[in-house]
Structure formats: C-alpha cells, structure tokens
Image (cartoon, rainbow, N blue to C red):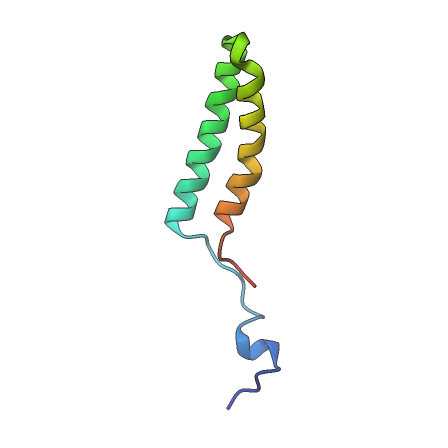
Length: 72
C-alpha cells in the first residue's frame, strides 16, 4: 500500500509530458491570430492601437491554454 504523504506515490517524480493535441492546436491558433493582428496593425493604422492591445494579451493566454491541466 502506498503512503498518501509520499510525493512519489502521487506521481510527483514523473515529467509532465507532452501537451494534448487539442491544447497544441489552441496554442497555435492563438499565436497565429496574434501574428495576423500585428501584421494587420502595421497596415491599417487607425485600428492599430486596439489590435495591438489584443495581440499583446494573446501570448500569455496562449501559454495558459497550452499548459492547462498540467501538473498540480
């Protein structure tokens, strides 16, 4: 029987492994959107500020989505 207080019995010594295919697709979709918004912002000046703000928020959100459910 394993001891519940032992971190190894809960899998704490195992690596987190690869993210799921769904999280990878979501990450690349978000990062692709970020790149498109930045490229469009350089060409459409009047919308540049709003698009740049949205594009700046996407990378941290993409990182959270890619790592959702890992560890802990």
